[in-house]
Length: 478
Image (cartoon, rainbow, N blue to C red; front, side, top):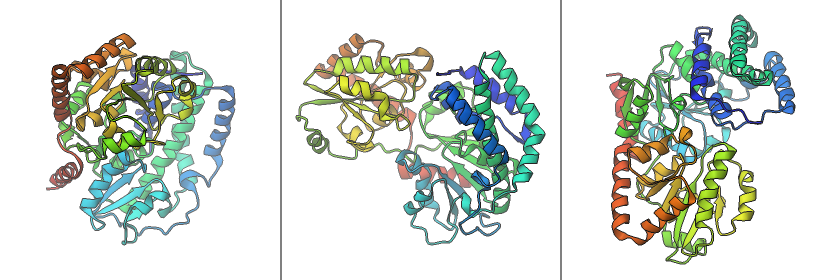
């Protein structure tokens, strides 16, 4: 069973939960990512079996004193006040698109001026660290007092149940929904309790996260706010939903360029809290040889490669998107279709299509890496994937396949501001591709539109973006 709720409903729930505070730390914002994945995208399995699992998880969260942030520590404990005069940078994933956001900053700051907080132990190998404590994880802090958290949570549990009961009734949802929300609230409140103590102990100068509304980092940001530690969030992707970025939990947001800032302001952001510094994780340079990659795919030199980049969406949206793209590309010897899956999507979602469309490559980094896909692409199609922005930054033209106006997000901006092509059917997409492939004048004119939008959307890349970000941080303490 799939459950999908509107941004309006979820914003209201976040606001109401923000009226409830654990030790003066509001509980709404730390739930944002959970709400997006489970209810806005609808990417969760709701069943009786899952409900019983949730009931068991609830007991574990309430009564197990040696789980999660309360686990016994095996690592060396960092000394008190170790973060004084240092930036605390978070690293939530090894995926380059996320890892490189703060890694470029780390390269500039060095170990004397920064501490890296990693959320997976295998990330430690990515740092050439020689200073003890320069790269830390949760195990490097003392475990907090479970009874202290239990007492603090008990003080707000009744208010939480009241809000969730009202939410369930207003939206005609089953009890299994509020059970899972309560579980996540308990888990996030435990992280809040942990980070409050850890940050008071570490005392960093300021904190930089990849995304302030992500489940791993939002409790860190909210706890830092309560301790008056300055917090900054970088921009990790496309602006598909205002709810994914707003309201800001961090003090300031560093975005990529003028147009992205305008989109955020349109969604209700305070422009005084947004700075334009570019995208440290991105590049406007093609990395890889088109000829070599075509040879790897056993393609002829004159075959054009047309990529569809997917993103989290409902089964109906996914079916519509793939039907339009694949029916146009399949069977045309002049074109090679590549469907690049979003990192969050299991390949199994596409198993039936893989068997149906033999000429189209469905790939999740098994055959082509991220940069290889961009290097070999002649044209990229998207619904609202941030991959389309990366293509534009590298000079690859982009076209939008619109399968649902309500969730078009970034795609809407590409169409209405960038004036890029919009296809709502296979016939419209085929007509556009034929025109783009066969008319040099049209192709040249369309490329100019793409390039103009790209330059307005992201002002700086890579090292230059990191340098401008660091200049901004330093200006806040001048």
